[in-house]
Length: 135
Image (cartoon, rainbow, N blue to C red; front, side, top):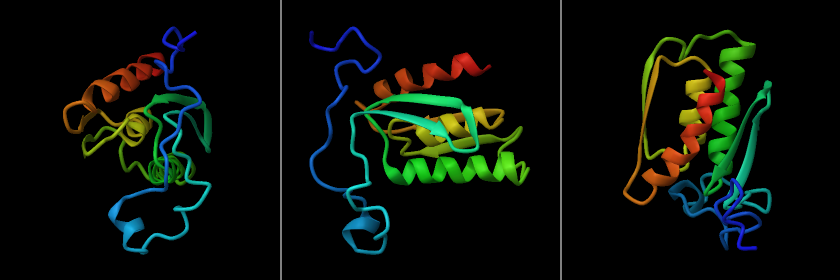
């Protein structure tokens, strides 16, 4: 079994080697997330802390930064009722696998445009299809 028949598209149980290489981690600015808890799985599952009905299975995984940001935005919208995204048109540049953009869409943004470089867009588009279940 090559794993291609499941939702992971063959990435289940695979991880990137090494730690985060974002500029903040390389420069030592962000030190609290570049440890062994920085999950580099290539097929990651995410559930919003403040609303466990919102779940994503992300081909390509996600960064801890994206998970923290998504949970923070959920906290603002759901717990604090901040209306930061409700009814707004949003643009996310460098969306990666789409965890933040998908979360913003779930939280009530009118429209979310997610962008990234060629090769990543296809993975992003596949992950974004999961939003259809949340209409």
